[in-house]
Amino acid sequence: MSTPFVTELRTSDEVIVVDGGKGDTLHLRVQAAELWDAQRLDAPSSASVESVKAAALAQFYPSGTSSDEFVVKLRGFEILDESASLAASGVKDGSTLLIARRRRRAVR
Image 1: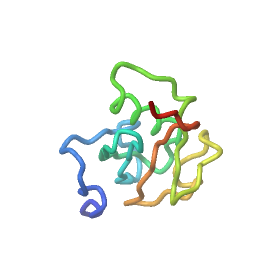
Image 2: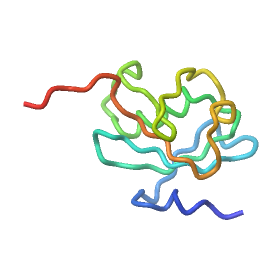
Image 3: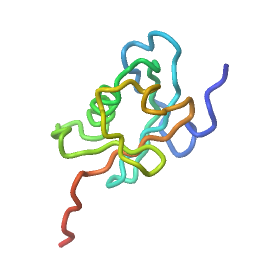
Image 4: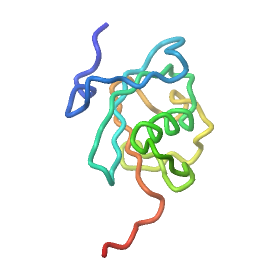
């Protein structure tokens, strides 16, 4: 099976693999709102939203940042239970997850 088209949109060639790609793999696009950057990510549908968020934040912010400062959104809505699996949260193959700051920051 080929990867969905959405994973090729303005992403780098590098793919983040979560949980070693065990089980049925979902090919996702993770986007950091504040950085205007996107990354390809492969994860099993049984992986938690929290593990995907942590892997993406490690890629977007290599110097480190608190994951509590960020929320994960799917189709414009925040995923409230990040301990739930991707499948239980409604994430499908080819979905785009948006990672945004929980609170807006002032522009100076």
